[in-house]
Length: 240
Image (cartoon, rainbow, N blue to C red; front, side):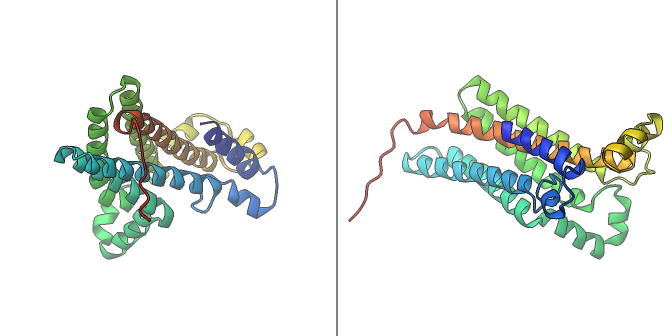
């Protein structure tokens, strides 16, 4: 969590606050970019959650656990492995762009990013199934609350992304309404050299990325705490 907060501060001061004018350093600390330090960290988190779930699946198979438990770990593992791949190569953005090109009329009727129309229903159901399994599987009450809280954080992050994809003049765009109601142009132009709406949009993305990383931290912490229950002892047999 400390490192995640550091990434937010680096984005605020180094990137958007222009602590340096070196473009490469600003891009490195831009939390909203896919090639930034924050993107690497978030993708690595997600992949490690998937690897942890695969390890539990292997253990469940070795212990001849009931079928539903093995299937549950496969669902969790597949979900987070896919999310790691998606974060790494921007699958949902690319398929969303392709969908917009192939189905322009249908995509135009959706007010925000086209990828949400394709992926949110599927990922929402898959994520809910993974959370439901972890809620049942994890024994510690705090671990269950961590998983449930992480799911809420991810839902909020998707909601922020939906708002970010709205046109500035759309009636649901609360950021445009906020900028119209409150005047903080003097601050944003002096501090960031940006118009108020652009600054608000960027920090919405910063908050979105932070919530996703925080959700990953909660889930991975809860899953690692489960190791003592499923793997009280772990022995490796080396075959010569």
